[in-house]
Amino acid sequence: MNRRAIRAMMRKDLRQVTQNKLVWMPMVIVPALLQVVIPLGIVLIPTFLPAEAMDPQELAGLLRALPGRLKEMLQNLEGVQQWVYLSANYMFAPLFLVVPLMVSSILAADSFAGEKERKTLESLLYTPVSDEELFLAKVLGAFLPALVISVASFLVYALAVNTVGYRIMGRIFFPAPTWWPMVFWLGPGVSLSGLGATVLLSSKVSTFMQAQQGGGLLVLPIVALMIGQLSGAFYLGPWLVFVLGTLAWLIGLWLIWVGAKTFSRSEIIARI
Image (cartoon, rainbow, N blue to C red; front, side, top):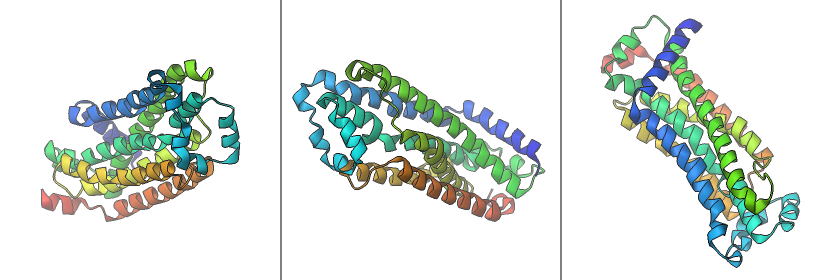
């Protein structure tokens, strides 16, 4: 495997990303919205409403799904504190998964479809590397930035909610144990699955927007996770997050294996 060529193609892709506002602006705006604006709004709600309005019993579904140890801990908190703790740590936790999925999908959508729009695809396809190496370079070029941005988003989220919520909680209360496997296992797995599917799609469509719109459908399982947790159908504890992460990794690795085996530059050249 020509690792030097793979690294060179990855560096080229990263330079193109920084030069294309259509690609990098959503990777800044969406994490800022999901990890700063929304969390701060959630934590600040109790400061604008009377204490009796923040009744955690309104979250009855989620409370029923919580394990006994967590319920006991919540009993030692006041109503407003219960609301802040649950909302920051559990209610909207699945929203975090949107960040690695979104970043990897945008970068993967730009992998081949973006090359077509920039009229650079033909020269890329004639690069003296194998089809598998070219496909792998595109996958890694999207996966590594997605990891960096998702971890950075987690750190920003932790800083935001702990800073604003400290006055209410009187201590640092985030993250709960669930977040560690979510950030460092499930998040990368979701990212890998998303980019595996989107790189395949990007090699088939003609424009970046088509590839991005197709990849947008991948957010539906995350929406289902959020609805399921809020309704009390299940609780995203550390073990469930680990199992889901393992499933996501298996799907992602399978998609990349299929993509590397089926990717053919000759077919793409024939469509140019």
